[in-house]
Length: 486
Ligand code: NAD
Image (tube, rainbow, N blue to C red; front, side, top):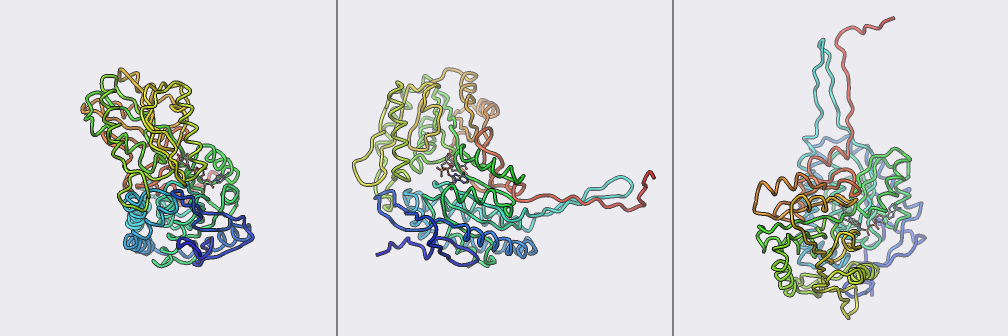
């Protein structure tokens, strides 16, 4: 019997599900049990062609609509997503293994926010009038780029698809979206919903596959822009592929972000922030503050509260709403994370709690906290992308700022302190695109999100995203005679 999560077909193109059994087989596995919940095929070149051509055809007509008309479709899609939040959340839980407790509030809801936000500002995307000497003037027109490719990571499949599609479509572009091969199901629902909301067939197509399909999309001359959410090595490959065609890019990549806790911080808030910034979504969040610098005097109290609060965490069936912590996304990811735990121990960090594989089917482990971590240890340098927190000691402000910045990454950073001047001063010195003061990992759609340094290029969300999905045409208007020198 097929599982209820099995989609009608692998791809969604031109308003319909479409199959091409000639593509490589893909199995979707529910990480909580190891069971196969869907069988799909990767896109063949013929499927990619259809997806891009139908997007090209849809884009021209879509761009000719007014922003108000485009926005209406997106806002309708937001309403549909909210009305179906529970079903979409259950699917997200099957796709990723994340607990329903999280997916009910953080995935389709966040996607709907993006559709509503960009749907609401679509009508206001206007150009400028620029007065010039002698009565001449210029005006600017904000134009779409064309067909954009979206390539997603596996940790937030609905959110990533919406965060890319909503600004792209609001600006008059079409999108061909390739979800992660590990979580291919959720983006198909967004494609269905957009069509139901009135988007022209072809405006948002979904094709399946792994890196080779992403690479083919990136280098296809019909694609004007590539927006990737993924790791830094993939970012390098995609950026290089896009460079050949001088394409626009948005790169939402990995991180190894610092979370700094000064000894005057509210302990419960700092511990709560560290929990959210390390263990939400079983630690599989790009912006996580995985290097937790705790001022020496607060260290033991911090570790004690952390250990106590982690003991209360419910690890179990992600479909049970009481569950706080689900499995890792896959067996491969679990093995990679456990490998880092072994390295932490081998390099001399103190394992305070967790870090053990659970003896049950699926990709399960207990959230790990390491103390006495030093800057040179592998677990303090590399992105682990799992539930492993490193606690590092520090003594003073200058020292912690220098150490926090001593990383090739620059995605996020957090500071906990009750000293308001110090909080802003330290945030001002941190090299990161998205910062939190006395909080961690909030991501409202109104606020630009993205990285500096190796963590990325461009911004998603907020008005900032508009600049990355449109281009300005400047038009000079001469009112008098043209005076040529000869
Ligand atoms: P990944 O880099 O392995 O894959 C990301 C996507 O790129 C997948 O869809 C994959 O199929 C595709 N891909 C792989 N090779 C490609 C190539 N050569 N050309 C084109 N596409 C290719 O990342 P992942 O394991 O799916 O996700 C985890 C990573 O994503 C972490 O590093 C995490 O920090 C990052 N991430 C970043 C953000 C952000 O907003 N900054 C958000 C979520 C995840």
